[in-house]
Image (cartoon, rainbow, N blue to C red):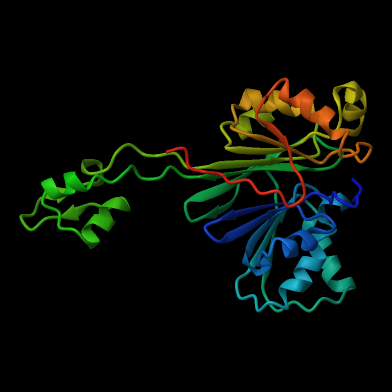
Length: 296
């Protein structure tokens, strides 16, 4: 809610195969991008949870800065109703110079809101004081492990045909027979999943949407003793986030969006309460980096 000297407002960046995806863009987002030496023109999509100021005030600066770095590709901005109005009003009032295409999509119903090469992003409804969405970034299953010995035994020559089989295509042999991927590949391997949830009451559907995430980034705004305050403000406690993580069977929970009432030292209480429920919980910090590895 409030930027502190060593605690900026909410923003999470996901990097996949060189492409960047930004989730929320609070005040100071540019500072962290700069300090991490990340190329913001590589940001393909900005996903906005809701239009409260602490989640969007960093966006106008990013839009203007992107005009200074020779951006060629469109920038997609996806978020709740009125996000298009916010972007358009900011451009007009600030008289922005924009030399690239901005595509704004307002979410009208939960579901898949963006698809890329080998993945999709699904938005799901949260419960806050205004329309708010969580996001699940999920890769599609990958082809199984390629077995060269099986390809050799079937007479498939090394080279482009092996690559075609690995990509899921069948190849025709000189004698007219066909070799299909299932003949040379192992069982399909799972992709990775990342989920982002902030500014919401705790409720069961969050666990369903975030199920099996490798990394679950979730708000943990208050300690358990302030549950009443959390409900009143339509937020959740760190303990509630941990129960969701446990129910969702995620690999790791990273807490974000702490109340400014807590000093860095006092945040340990939130961590302890969450770890008592879900041990693999961490307090996310500014510019902290998590690696999301394949399981197989």
